[in-house]
Length: 94
Image (cartoon, rainbow, N blue to C red; front, top):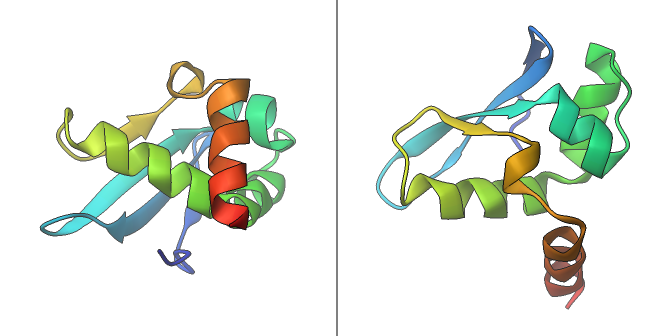
């Protein structure tokens, strides 16, 4: 899993690409999700920093969601819980 160095903040969210099972996936994560679960502020730089610091978790959730939804994948606060984030952090530390 690799961080998208071309990720960009746009209209209150972060847009990035990631490797999917068959092709690259376009993903958008709402700024509200970045603020609530990853400590971002409301400004673009803070949201990009939160994406960069947590991209493994964000990409894991996007990968799961991609099996049920066509691209672009939109991640919102409804796609995350404190428990799921804690679990994914623990997995990534191993």
